[in-house]
Structure formats: structure tokens, C-alpha cells
Length: 177
Image 1: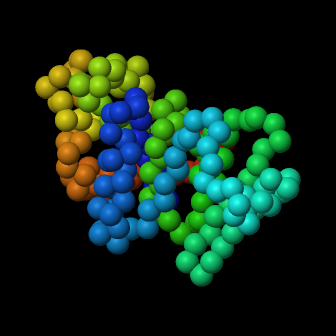
Image 2: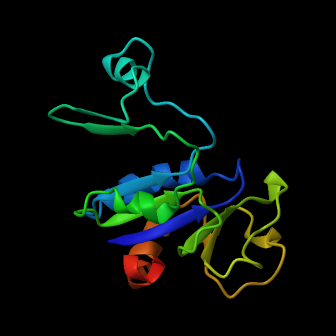
């Protein structure tokens, strides 16, 4: 399995890039999973649905499945902080690539998504885990870099770069233990 993070500030285009990378990688015959960082209390369930009723009744976990889909909802009794490696461990073993959105502080190799118009600082000067920068503003980068600069508006090119450099993204859980 290969794992790459996409880091950047809100509004930089991370979600759009990841959304476009999924089909670009699938066209290459690869199975793709996504790990997404969410803030605070989020919900994927709806009041009145059976799974929501089970959670409200106090279930620790609810697994719902059909012939086409499986979802696991787990409630934590105390607020805790799972790291990205805990979430990767929950994924199906037969996946080729895991795209991690968010977790900008993680120790995974990451592509920084940066737009000058967002007005946010770039992270690559201080983050040694950033291996490339995807931007629509290459000429406006705040400083020189030896990292590859990828065209944010060319997801197929970004997917090609990932595949060509796949050896850099091999995930070995023992490296992060």
C-alpha cells in the first residue's frame, strides 16, 4: 500500500485535488481509499434512521452493510485524538493507494496544496515531510525549493507523478510505531 498526504490550509483546494485524483488513479487500474480529517463533532448519520437510533440508544459501534457498501460508526466515550496511523490501520488491506486529506502535522510524506490567492503561508519551508508542492501559483511561491512543483490544475499530471514516484510512498506501519 502507498500512502500520501495532502496538506494545506482551508480553501487551498485539497478536497478538489483529492476528488480528481481518485478517478485519475482508478483509470490506471489502482484501488484508492481516502482518510479525511474532520473537525470536532461531525455526523454521517441522520436522525430517525435505524443506525442513528442505535447510536442514540448507546451502542459503542454500529456497522451497517448492504451488498454494495459498509459503514462503521464508532462512538468514543471520552474525547480522544486518533492519529492518521490508527485510521490507516482500519482500512482494507487490498488497497493500492491511500490519499490522506488533512493531518497536516503528520509524519507522512505529503504534497502541499498551496494557492497564493488564499493568502496563507506555505508550509514547505518548515515541514520536512512535504515532498512536492501542488499549486496554481508557481511563480508566487514564497521561496525557492528543490521539491517538485506540480500543476494543481492538472490532476492527471499529479497522479502520474505519484505513480512514477510510488516507491517514495510505500507504507510500512512499523516505521511509524
